[in-house]
Image (cartoon, rainbow, N blue to C red; front, side, top):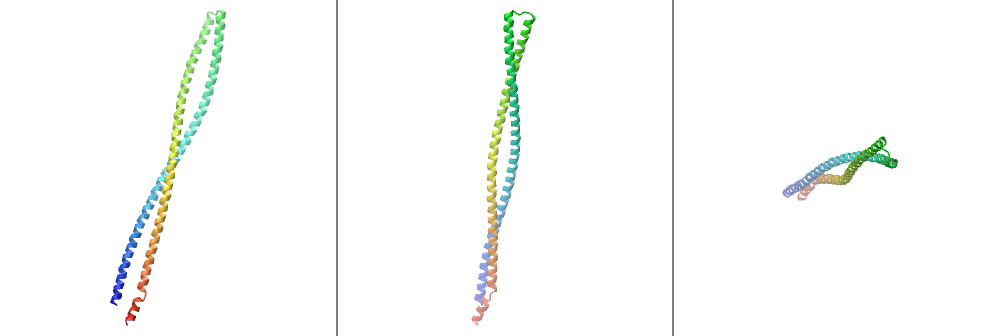
Length: 217
């Protein structure tokens, strides 16, 4: 009977030690699970921020593309007008040149000469206007180049953002997978603890010790 009592005390001590280890393991798994959940939540928030940035960048790029298309249309329209003006300018120069030659051959003086000089002055004014047009087109070209550079940088930034989005999604998937595995491991440990408890309770409740007493009797 004394040995049976010592055995029971020893088994209870062993069970308490095993149960303590399993409880520590379960608590550790629970902490890991909470950490994985927190990391997954943080990654979700970061992914949402990245997606919002991507949407804003996409909208900005769309607006930039529309502005660029309008600029190209305006550029084509102005270029056509510029070519028409140059054609008129050439015709006027040719006509005035012919008038000057005819006036020189006819020896025109007085009012006719004033008319010729007025035409020459108008030609000079047209030349000044043409130079202004050239300067305008140079400025427009620089502006267009700057817009193209901005567009290229925006496209590059969009590409980098897509890479970051993919990496964030992969990290989130990995974190969620780790959280699921940790949760499964925690549930498995809890089941094992419950099974050990039931087994120990069954061992304690079985009439092994009463049989031992009967054998002694």
